[in-house]
Image 1 (cartoon, rainbow, N blue to C red):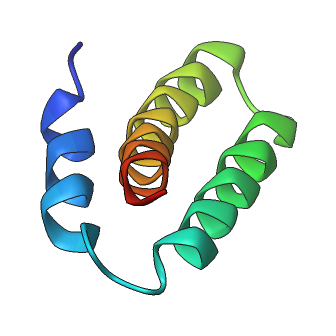
Image 2: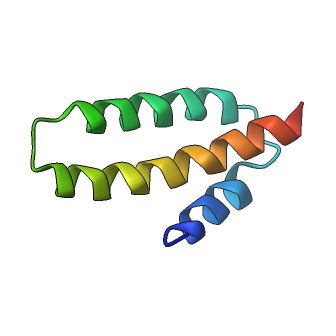
Length: 66
């Protein structure tokens, strides 16, 4: 994955934090907003891919905290 470093950075920074759940919801909302933009689909796809990498990091942090 091209953006694996983003996922890893989120996991390192948010592991064990109480706000990881809230940040996951914010990351999802951000990705959904990006997907809704009426811009060039190729540019939008690149942005969404980056946002998904962040979202995955938060998902992994939240999942492992349970």
